[in-house]
Length: 312
Picture 1 (cartoon, rainbow, N blue to C red):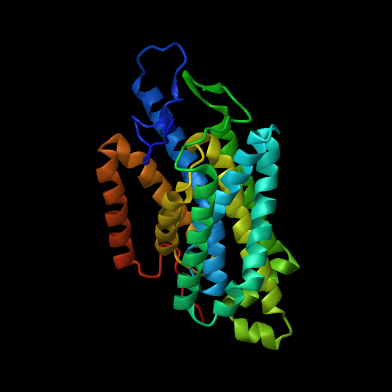
Picture 2: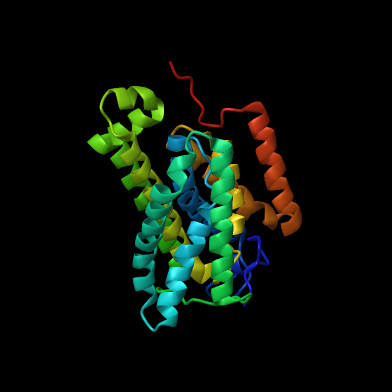
């Protein structure tokens, strides 16, 4: 079954949020259902954006291959399942496999582009195109379903909601908490923040910014791979899976602001809520347009992002 482009009342994304007894919903049940849809879709957006935001903040470049990193994570899960292994094993392998790909690309290609952000964007776009078309050659133009490793639903009041989407929310919260602790409570986090704030001073202090950049890019790729592995049961496996998430991720980073951990996460939450919420009140096509319009208006009045701050 082909996935739908936009979540909403008619989309696959919300089709498994229903009343347990099949009867009409009360207003409270309807609000609960919509709130869970907003939260679950926002969680996926946050997970995708975290990797992109880290790379953009640290290196000053937008990685146009980030959507294809998500695609590689999804393909890892699909391939694992196609070979007869458990889906959960593919989800464990996805961030590791994509992290390895990211490290090889960073060391072999992308590190030569850091001094020229425009060339870096063109280079990562070309890399993403190669990855996407390579996957298309492997899977064709078809949609391949992957089962959820944890099927079924649980009760949220009188509403039955997907267990797997609940797990995605918990995983996203855990990843965000871990990333925040690493950045704020460890020596590695201090080095990362130093390289982010002032790369020249960090190098003068003896920090290996080359190593930190490689680690950061690898971590961002791993997050994208994890996100791809988690969402493929919901959206199916197809070659253009990462394109939509890439566009939303760029909007979220611009909206939240580059240079902090909190900015992209906040922007992702806003974009996720808009993307999942607007189709409930208007058509999915118009909803996609409105997401862009609202984001552009906010950036117009807050060019530094929602979490911008003045630096001394």
